[in-house]
Image (spheres, rainbow, N blue to C red):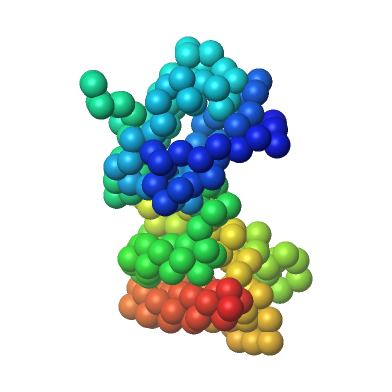
Amino acid sequence: MKKSSAMAQTGHAGQGATLFFGHGSSPASVVNALGREIVAGTFPERVTLPPEPEMLDRFGISRTALREAYSKLTAKGLLQARPRVGTSVRPRAQWNMLDHDVLAWHLQTVPAEEIATDLYALRRMIEPSAAALAATSRNEADVEAIYTALEAMKVNSKVEADYGFHVAILTATKNPFINAFSSLIRAAMLSVFEMSWRGAEVIKDDRIKQHEMVADAIRDEDPQAAHRLMEELLGDSIKDARAAAK
């Protein structure tokens, strides 16, 4: 979005937020700009957006284009329109956090440590049980995929290979809903993997060994060990991510 040197203050956004006004914006750029501002808290939860004429002037777009942008943000769970009240920001709990754009805006605006903490809480709910399930449902091709990713972690980019390792385990569960988990939050997982490997730089061999132990438990069809070892791996990885964020 193009920005002019002119700026304006608005009380609608709360806390005297400073907004940039531009011209010639497209609906997509308006979605991106407002999405980032909502996630960053420039427009807090339940606050009503500035009046339509003000937003039209800010972005230099037509009423139809502005309403198209609002419609897309509404579909992502960020906005709601109410008759005689206006368009307001929905509570954060109602946002579609698995939406690609909403995730991207969080990665761009929310402190990395906060994202890591929230994501690891979700992963610890899913991945230890997924590892246990993989140990009872995997086939030889799944085991090969897990070890292929493990070997890649030793010689190639650890971030992409680590993601591939965890995806291979989720795939081995043979559960399409569990398998979809990784693709939905791929960008966030890659970001956090990058943090955790930075934090584990001096002990990376230990972390690779932990991955190998998880792989061995799945290969050996030991669900209890797979669950325990994955839980330990995730617990140590979040410590690495927090260390890198400091």
